[in-house]
Image (tube, rainbow, N blue to C red):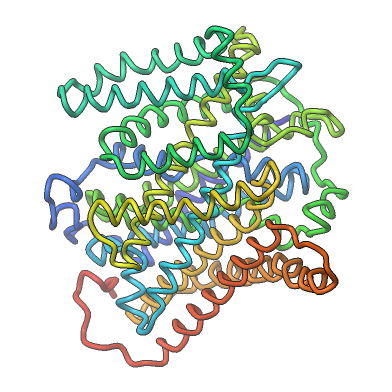
Length: 568
């Protein structure tokens, strides 16, 4: 029964939080007598102390998007559910949660500095520049993958019914509701609880209205091509990344957070009490050779499932907004370690929607977003909710997670490119955004439909490699402070070896394509773009590792501030 897998996973996460999470907390010396940046630099805007439950909810909704759904479902189909479950559980406990907790603590000890700034302080040389370029390229692949996944959602056909146009219409209504909520909250100063009571039912109403809009509207949306949707979604990213945060991102993220919690509750209800049996193979032997031309369990399981087991993107969140709101150091354990385990649960529940499908079913021929939505629809059927209502709801919920990934990644890419280039002001932000979206646009227009299948391996690899580099920076910081770093070094080495192997294997088709070019054959655009980016990422990673290794041979400089150094 699927309930057994979910219960065992939950038990493993609970024991890990109580035992290993406490061990890591002792190792890094969490100490509530230290003043956190939220109090020391409190400005009422960016640096504001938040109670642990509130900050946990905000941080969790920021790190959990569509990736811990798509990656586990892809890996479950390709390799079988057992390797995917084992990687999620052990990866989240010993790598992902350690990565998040130590990244958060390191940022707090450095006055809420970013991981890039921490690297700049402790690793002399140009690793800071390498790090920023690496993150920027990784974010571009996030934008590519999730733009295309959203497009597939808007073009969904299931059981002979075109649900995609209705979901697209509901998504447009959802974004409109978020805009109105932002204006009412910040311009008219309405209470958040009142707006929550009003707008959550309106979001559900938007799901109901979508399929019932006039036929000409749905026909128009059905006739929008995949490439046209690519342009529309990237235009949304452009607008969302340059308008004020309060107008769209914050209210949309808030409403999306409620959708996330609702889908988790549905997933738990269905998997624990639905009586669904596991029908998919625990080990898919044929799948071990089917991922884009014979890529094997190692290393591709570990980069297909990125978020849910370990994610370098989390370090950006931990050292960006969360560290500026941490009320006391001990809160780093529930927020850093605990939230990652909760994301692991999201991944397990996503895997459950594959496990209940029999091998050979036509459902397995569809995209991960549809498998997830069909699974939730089956769970909601236990409550008497019909498929024609439950399925669009699940698709819209999935789309809300993707919006969070898209607009946040675009804004972060803009910040990083502005920092690299020195472009300032509103005009500089617009140019940086256009450049950051231009590359994904070219990729999506030149490649075939379902480009996310091309982008996903590089996206997963870059995300996991970013995590390994973050652990590298944290390890250097700990060692230069005279502390043991074995609990960050071991996962860092594993992730580094895994991602380097994955990059080398993905670059191979790019190198071999030159033979075809010399003989007059045209190389596929996706092979050229992925291969070129893979080479750049591999070079940046190598330079970062060499710079860090060299820095350990150099005697540390002047005595660091007590706040930067873990207690003895």
